[in-house]
Image (cartoon, rainbow, N blue to C red):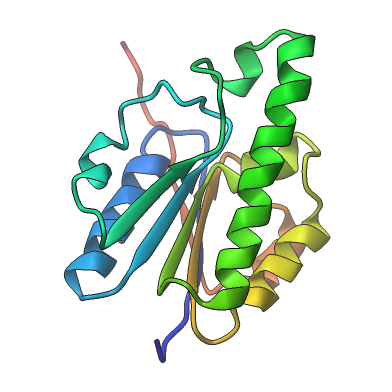
Length: 164
């Protein structure tokens, strides 16, 4: 892949995952291979089911064992789930290093940063591992200012109104 792009989709509004799913479908439609790894949401969410139908062009991974999202777990379940989540992040690094796909999507990677599971240096290393061969898409609510200089495209999702 000649035009590697590092992209972040962030904000308080809903739709970050949907935007990342859209990026994945767009890349697969262009003949690119995509690996989509989800974090912090548990394995019980169904918003990724449509992507699973697009294998092998898009491969979806969730290393979490709990059906509940990380923020809903009690302390003992969080400890074990943290190991599963970190296994997923280590897998993402290996994928980036080996160039196994054209696009790597890490849904809620910035949430892991917010929770202190990973450091900004971990994100920098991941970006370096992508080299010139793998585009990277990360989502989350917040993006640290110091990370902005390492990102090619930043999209903010804002909530304007919610009467639901």
